[in-house]
Image 1 (tube, rainbow, N blue to C red):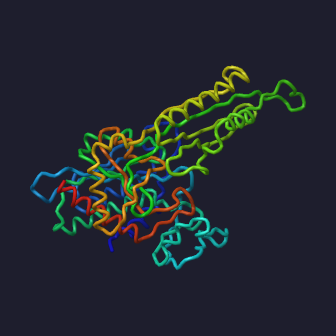
Image 2 (cartoon, rainbow, N blue to C red):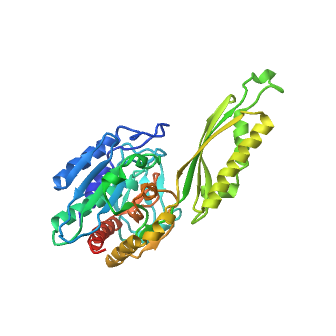
Length: 408
């Protein structure tokens, strides 16, 4: 066993939740520095070189090569922040030897993690799971990735007989809001290729992700006293609901899987006078992605035609693109990861990411960066859990990638 679990239990208790601020300068929350500083100290304690924490909360470090022959520089990355969508404060993790059936996360609130709701749970009978207390997320996305990278570094330091080239590591802010990595200095990082350790279940190996856009809608109404509002009141809430109903119901996250894209309304707040709506738009296929954005624009145009110019205002911008196009010419880096998994007794599970990673943006910034599993399940909520055995396998895979990359 490595010290991955010990590190993970320590890291998840540090609140690093990012925030939707409207300001793209990282970090969106100062508290992400709390974990960053801990990692800087631990990297220094391991004897890594070039350990650095910059003003934007990027942590970077180098494990020098222990071979004389030329070898590519390989990078490993994970992100510091947890999602703004669910509380990451006062995380109280618990290790459970899973014997099957339900796991009571919180008896007082009657919160139960059950294989009836989450069938994947059943495959981990006999293993040790880290779970929440039912009031917060766990933070395995992506503190498991951080813990696994750190444990792998320690293992390589403690086992100099394992030959490897130069290894660069980075821990990054604001991945969950999609803005942090835009400020990362890829050239200074100096890797030839890299891997984000930010995937899901055991064996996941991913080189495809969504094309992504964000849309902000402001709907303007007219507030009038209800007693004298006939032919005068314009209710922005109802108009917002009408606009949402113009988007395909079957293209919502709850009804899609695999390569199917969606519109996701993740914020709706307002009054008669004004309503704000926020969407994320996703599709793996670029043509379908563009069609989804076009439909959103047509819906807004229809509302403005029906209720008057300026009733609905739309701000829409692309966030990231499917990295497959850029990774296909360098598939050998996927082959290295696949070989590493097989050597560690892990069956590669090549699946599309139904989301995005820092690696998607970095791939378009010139650093090819596919994604590898952490072992986590049900991220971004109170039912999040991770098998300790999967974490250990992730550490082994990182170490083996470092070894195989030296021979690439």
